[in-house]
Image 1 (cartoon, rainbow, N blue to C red):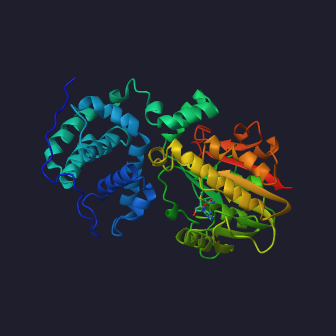
Image 2: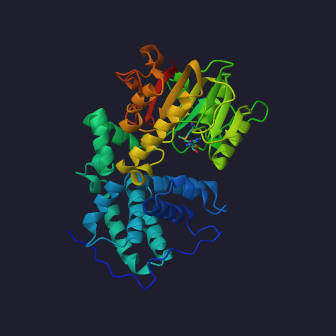
Image 3: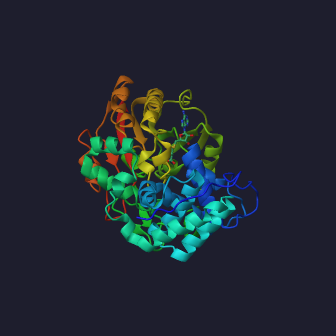
Amino acid sequence: MNKTSMRSPEPGGRQSPPQTDQAPADPTRDIAYDILVSVLERRRSLDAVLDRAPATVPARDRAAAHRLAAMVLRRLGTLDAVLRPLLARPPPPPVRLVLLLGAAQLLFLQTPAHAAVGTSVELVRRRRLAPFAGLVNAVLRRVAAQGEASLAGLDQALLDMPGWLWSSLSTVFGEDAARRIADGIRQEAPLDLTLRRAAAAPEGAVRLPTGTMRLPAGTRVADLAGYARVDTGGTFWVQDVAAALPVMLLDPQPGERIADLCAAPGGKTAQLVDAGAEVIALDRDRSRLQRVRENLDRLAMQADLVEADALSWRPPALLDAVLLDAPCSATGTARRHPEVLHTRASADLPAFAQGQARLIEAASTMLRPGGRLLYAVCSMQPEEAEAQLAVAHRAGLRHVPFEAAELAMLPEALTAEGCLRTHPGLWPEHGGMDGFFAARFVRT
Ligand SMILES: C[S@@+](CC[C@H](N)C(=O)[O-])C[C@H]1O[C@@H](n2cnc3c(N)ncnc32)[C@H](O)[C@@H]1O
């Protein structure tokens, strides 16, 4: 196979263009490139980078940049494996990013070849890497010519998942399920909405067996009728089908006093309020708590918002229930937030598990005898899930397993110990779901 050779960049060739408030020349690809740099080199979140894009960039370009960068992050191992045989030696990191963006458009986003190749050549020039324009052009033309054949013989499930996550998932779920999870993560996630009680579903939405309404990937939520109704408040909010399960399993009753200890951005708070509970929504991050306020305002819902650290906060009176949706590695959200595949490592797990244990201990002191704790994490890792059952026991909490009848719509998510465990390999016929773990306890 012919390999395309490279010349060295000109002095200063690796600098990024200066940041300005002006809209970039090709916002989709420029922003997608910046996202990749920030995620892969600085372990930042995709949304945080997108939030920094100039306000002049239209929503449609932001959405396209998000989709393109997310596709590269989801398919990075496969894309590298396609490009490697076409290169005489590893290209400088910025050139690799341009090639990844171009190849993702060609292989996974159905961008016409002339557009994907041409815009990639322009992008490498704008990044002051003009000496590599010929290389980018030649390599991407080869990818375009090979098309689907580029992927033949590649074990994409293994290539696209970090090794540590693959071994952890194979141990927990078995190799077949790990493969189904990898397949689920590689799909673009649909838009899931939780409807408020008795509200009408937005047009075109499909009702999933657990009640969540689902619309195709790429649907813009703000365009849907009912998003910001002024008379009654919005009729729905965005929340993955799996993220809606913990509150369903807590089964909040009207008038119950319930604290949502890690509330922002407020999807589960809204479910608790919608059920008629008296809700205290707590978050230690002021700007994130502000998002809870905005979301509840849009829905015309009331809760007591408290900016505090759940480790030291105590309620004015003991509570009927606590929802602890604890901070975690978030591996369960990899299909919606594919950066977690690159920003997380197994070395992060002990610190997360320790933080969760301290929050469980704090939560146990807030409950009246007989009060319920619903512990949840959007993680698939056992350190953050089953391992916390022993912590809860030591803190004076009794595990109350979920019953088969409570998960009759999703029996495959009920574990032998009576916990909830979902993952992106479940419900492939409906479009999958995020990974979540939940367990229920009662204060003895
Ligand atoms: C997993 S998110 C919660 C998602 C939320 N429950 C929902 O459904 O929309 C974690 C949140 O916990 C907050 N948090 C983390 N540690 C905390 C602590 N010790 N006290 C209060 N909030 C905390 C973070 O600021 C973050 O907003």
